[in-house]
Amino acid sequence: MRRFEFPVDKLHAKAVNETLGDLRRLQWSAALMAVLLGAGSAWLFVLGQPWSYILGVVLAVCALTSLFMVVWTPRKVGSIDHLYAEGDLVPAVVSEVHPRGYTLLALLDIAKPGAGSPHYALATRTVRALPGKDNTVGKRLPSVTVLGDRTSRSEGETWQMVSFMPVAWGTRDAKVITQATSRISDTEWNLLKKNIPASEKVRTSDRQFVLLDPAELPDELH
Image (cartoon, rainbow, N blue to C red; front, side, top):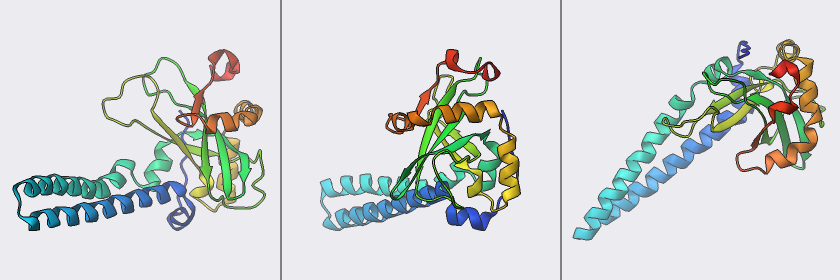
């Protein structure tokens, strides 16, 4: 595991970090659903029929669940400082340029703690914008992993949910980004560059990541 701690610029992260943007959209969706379900529940109770009371209770429970999601989601994900501090530093590059965004390709070890060996994978993330200029294919973007499981009872040696955040989404300081870039070995950068042509295959896979065959990895990554 390779951690990289740096002072997170919260105002900058709030403006450009799309992980935070995705979280805010999820909260708004849950809040809207809670309002709609609550209104539906109230209308059913007003009808005053035996069947409407039953459905009203069901909708009320669903509304409360949605409200719980509004509060629980950010606590589950953690603060932006926590995400950057707890994630592993990994290499990522711009692998595709689209009319309205970019696809990033990263090399990650998605093995859970306690797994007998690393499980390297290629992962993609499509983003709307990136800080800075010259965001052409091959540009290096040191990043931090965001890994998790869909349920607390998940088994297996690898994480189910795999994503990453560029360090540049957490700081404007070019020196910090340069330092993060240098902390990653040339072996990893070269392996990632070699796999840029596989970006579309990874992006269109079910989970947007593809495990690499250990036999194809450089000795340094075994």
